Image: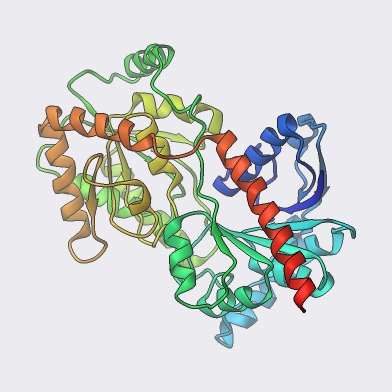
Length: 414
């Protein structure tokens, strides 16, 4: 049995008591390990009272209080980050990224760092001889406010990591274009096929939801699920709804929440609110929905909108949607193309007239219910090629074996 430290990104708690795609995938490993018992995990995560209700036999949850919630600490980090911005230094600091590495104990077989490069570099300095694996879930240089994953830092990551795991084949291929580091492997995101599946009991829940919200068989329900920020494209999606020719029968299901920190993001929020107000008769706003209830939202939905304005490394919403037999209208970019094709989606290139083309695709599906059903069948067929939780865990264990063997062989020849 390996002794493994798992270091979360530092923004949301692990296990995923408050959602988060990365946090959910870590939770999959913890849950499956309770049955297969190949590792003992020490999970280092931000403190949350909900974690006190989580119990594992093979995992110890080590909670660390985020003092950035205290005014003096918040002011200090705000001043530091504003200074970086003033001098055009592409860097930002977050309390948990700085403090988490100081809590890691010695003596682990592996340290698994999830999606936070700053934490990785700090741990690499502390533990130069420990095998550290970095699991990257986002592409580099796609979001101009993400100073953690720039081309320069990802290239440096390739020089320091013992192994890099990527969330998709696309992301692995992209990283290989900037580094000669050869220990890059894909641990493709999985889906809970028991949860995200077409079931009779979900049909009953769907009918109840539709009745409660005045949705008829003539209505087309389009769901957007994700953060309400400019990179996820919620504004472009709402603009597309406005531009549709036959949108009188639409109902828009908005699921997600906002991360508004900067002045620019707050301005973006105002634009979203303005569009929501104009479309209020069509919109059902649900806010944050726990992962264990998302299948209910998909069951209600006819079409899933994924209007990403950055290059997605994977696209869990897309995988969940097709697993539920739901066609998508999505951006034609990055890891979304690992999941979606013309058999189950309409794919829109990012660029000029994006909202107009998105609107045309939605109009097409709204007018042609036979096509909508055909794409839904294609979605279920496409979803079959993706792994479940069990396969995801076993793939992770095989990669640990590979990391152990590679390092042992390299140490012999050094």
